[in-house]
Length: 176
Image 1 (cartoon, rainbow, N blue to C red):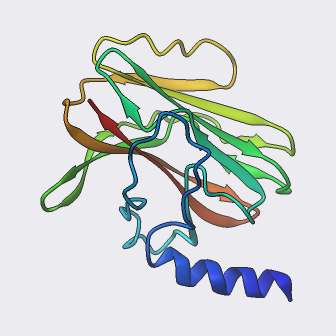
Image 2 (tube, rainbow, N blue to C red; image 1 turned 90 degrees about the vertical axis):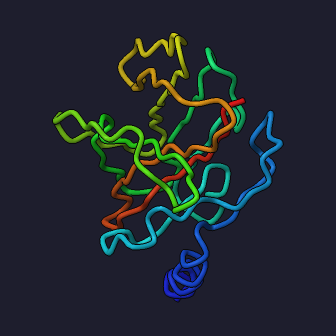
């Protein structure tokens, strides 16, 4: 019964964009709501914004929501209590907010084997801005360097399978 109540609540909240945001994100002056770029995607069951995974068997965090050119936006997904999380860690996107909605900046997935995260596992993405070195060395660190414009709002996003439910993860950030 708890699962049905949670799913009903999540469905209602998903229509507004995210399950909410907490203050656990450091360096944050960004008080805007979580972007809703996945609202038209029929395959997405739930949207989780960075720092707002309470009540979900995952942890999805970002270390900062404002970055300067030459900086890096680190994002982490952790499996706290899901049976399994499945994803292609190379299949992530960065969107830019425009007057007409969210537009894709980076959507260049690399076909790689499916990766699963067992309980306790973590995976990291590091998005470098401008000439930053995102240091993607390591078995669980992925990312790229993007030429993002100062003064614009962006969002990192990927879709993962959490216990057979498609979950969109969204981490909004602003480039100073």
